Amino acid sequence: MNRPVVVGVDGSPPSLVAAEHAARAAVQRSRPLHLVHGYLHPLGYGVPVNPYDLGLPAPTEDGQKMLEQAAADLAERWPGLTVEVRQVAGGPGATLVEESRRAELVVVGSRGLGGFAGLLLGSVGTQVASHAHCPVLVVRPAEEPIPVAGPVLVGVDGSEPAELAVGYAADEATRRGTGLVLAHVRPPDGERRVPDEVTETGSAAHAESAGLLATAAAAVRGSHPGLPVEERVLSAAKPEQALIEASGDAALVVVGSRGRGGFAGLLLGSVSQALVQHAHCPVLVARPYGHAR
Image 1 (cartoon, rainbow, N blue to C red):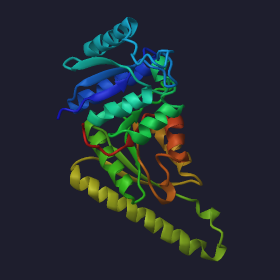
Image 2: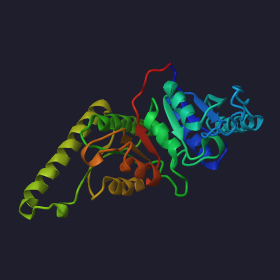
Image 3: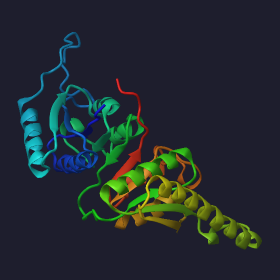
Image 4: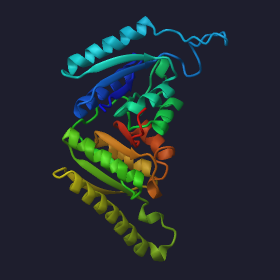
């Protein structure tokens, strides 16, 4: 099955930036690109007022022109890329989640207009990242330049979701021809509450971090020979602080759907929310693939 890369487009600048990232991802994966526009407001805007009228409004001409123009621009910039466009009568979150059942990757912008309003900061972005049936790429705003040649950064904590994230991160680094940074965040030694055990506990923490990183690095080097891998221990009171700072020189940050220890709640908790809102580069949420229908 030739799963496409799917991106929600509404004509707003952030959604067009997301479409560019989606086009690049489609080319890197040798997949077609699908531009999707959901033309019903998530709260029901556009639905017939009469509850007995079950008909849905037809796709708009303006929406079709917007999609076709975006597709033409992307096809010109990326020769050989196959681009399809489609308008879907549905709310933005539900539309993208449904599209994800048959997708290789779903890409969402930071903010949008109309059918895709609030893709990042509102409930729609959370809905897509939480329930998609494939990985989700959240494109950060373009206020600052993204180092395209920078490394791919991924958090390591020994959990199964983190292992999935490391695998996705290694694949991305290989596609991009860049390096991979494996990061483990641990609390600063000075925050330990038992002074007599600081040295012993600190040494154990260092050993645990080194062990987690070494295990992850060995797995990556076995599955991706020749990929440059850096193991990095970060110290911070909160994992999101360290990862946001480390994302400053990264081209992409990959997070697992859930984690444990220092990375608990990567998808639904504060760490994930902090990264998708404040990382200095795009964030890939490593959702596992579901069964296509």
